Image (tube, rainbow, N blue to C red; front, side):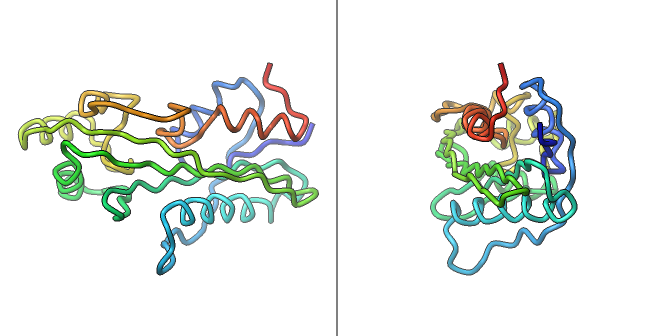
Length: 192
């Protein structure tokens, strides 16, 4: 079996992939994640997922490499990781009572034959109409400053969410496992 590498620095993606109970290693790709002018959110996510996989393939030319990226959008605006408390307050204030689409791109790149499987798995989250005090209370408790949309659905962030829609709940966390299992099967890797 080819070695399997997750091209990501995300501990959340690492945890998700470990649920499949197949051996893998992790390599953090170093790429510029700036969106290109005029690029649609889905295109940004897909381009970055593929770029991460290709970057790691430079060092591992015989591996199967998983690349992922996620772009959240509201009213056509891309919502990145807030990184700071003030930015998270602004994001959650902007999103309260509204629906955000998380475009989770996934690719599986077979570096030995350059075969690339890639797609975007959307997931829609509607946020509760939170008060300023609730936003502040949530951020003080969870500090989700490394999460697009300023909330972690796998933690206390579930309390700021009114509803979720999508085919794969793992897509919201950043690694669509249902689709990944299909991609792996096409490369001869079975999970169960």
